[in-house]
Image 1 (cartoon, rainbow, N blue to C red):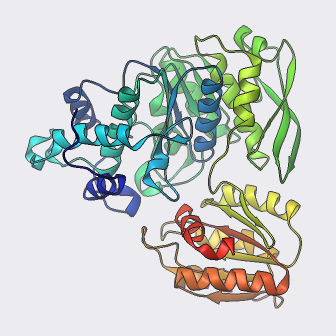
Image 2 (cartoon, rainbow, N blue to C red):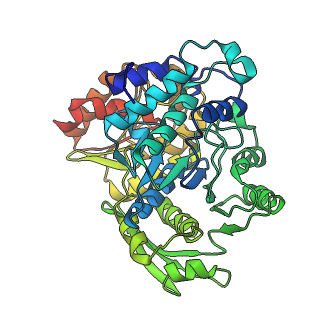
Length: 457
């Protein structure tokens, strides 16, 4: 295929950005008929390879990465589709986390461009143009087909039931912990959100999950029963113990239980294995457990050493990423209260006082609750705009943090709306005070930080 319309990945990114983008807060009606139609016109590039589908509120990106790296270790060439990206759109469509050659992505984009170019909304089912995420998802499927991959691990973008990725025919599905998130789209309660996530469950296809919230687990178990799908649960079908977290990563013991399936027993060498990953945080122990459950359900020649190697080679940007040791600086895109609690525990364990918080979040996040969680633990707090990609209201977020300052005269709180100026102050103050820095609240803020050369000076 000749590439006529794109000479660079930037050109592809500009093309998909020209369509409705829910990630930027633009509205659309979620449905799958348009996705199915476009995929059929392209020869169904989402089919024909082993597929793992991952949904959830937190941890789905790391679970997808752990599984893709393990499949790679078992000598299956594996496409990995995740979101959002931090520095480059190419991060979304990779070979087990490693960027694909531009040629594959340009050819895939050419296929998708040729399908949609010149068409009006009346030419598509539902009389709406496709979205940014739909086009990006289609490019991923086409790229994986062009590359001749054996397998693909697909992370859900938003929800599950009506997410653009939910046209796949999976060999196993995974649902990571569920929180209140995107309530304007998914519903205002945990059961409602769980029902949307459980929409990825397919008839007769095994589902694996880790759910601290019982009300979420009940919904998933009921959906699995209705679909005739076996459901494996962390804590029941596999146990996690001896969790240790340090600046090098996370290790734990995964052990069999009375209900562990035979396929899992083989991977756990009958009883248990010690396992580790460079990903930092106790949450990754559970993520490794649910990943092991899912891998055990695949009809492939998988061995214990493949899991050990795959998990040990997994890494992700802006997931408790230590970008500097002097000063000690951590980036994490956490943007829900529960995720913030998780990273805070690890940050307090690995850092020392004084501590500086650089925080920015999109306008729809629970900043009042997050302010209550974070405020007591920092000597300096800087509120800023998380870049320009998403709508944000830093002045309102600043007010939420200021409310928490009334009984804490030892903390300085600043509003610096310009992101680069806020980054400069955080790093300057960290060097002056020999302080540790946590940058969180948004993946887009983390991206702006990484783009700044200041963090590498």
